[in-house]
Length: 219
Image (cartoon, rainbow, N blue to C red):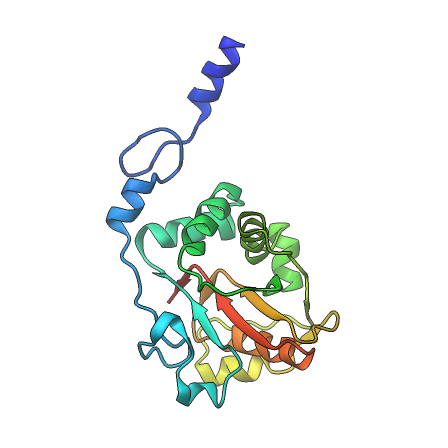
């Protein structure tokens, strides 16, 4: 038993900044080196209370608001990269723990997530947004529900917002009715908001009362 404890201690990851064992990034280093984004409208980036969608954008988009606490830079980018391309499940637990502290104090009926493309799912063997959603579901005691299906693969790299909007339009369908439900929709990174917006539109077509987006970072 003593031997097992020694092996367990030795095998623990260490903080990549201060080298303290226990996690790939310790809480002290994360909070002292990673700046927070100010709450803002997901569509136009104007500052808003708690990340609500501004009144102008609310007339043409479908998210009630969004929680995106970090920028895609530095340690955040490294953790996202490990989650997205390295299969780092510990990064999913760590990042879910960090972002949940910034969520609005409102009741959500379900947590859902942006579905991966079939190509990405086959290549990685998992969906990083789903890993985050699973962890949030466990931590917040909110049921996880797979509500969306992606119809086709669309490569959005390098596209403008108009291009991204066009590429995702009609690309999602709902997997069931959501009459009157308040949804928390999870993704890992937001660029223009086009994908989250289209997913929210699809959920509302299925009857959702409102959709709040959450992601780790925005480019």
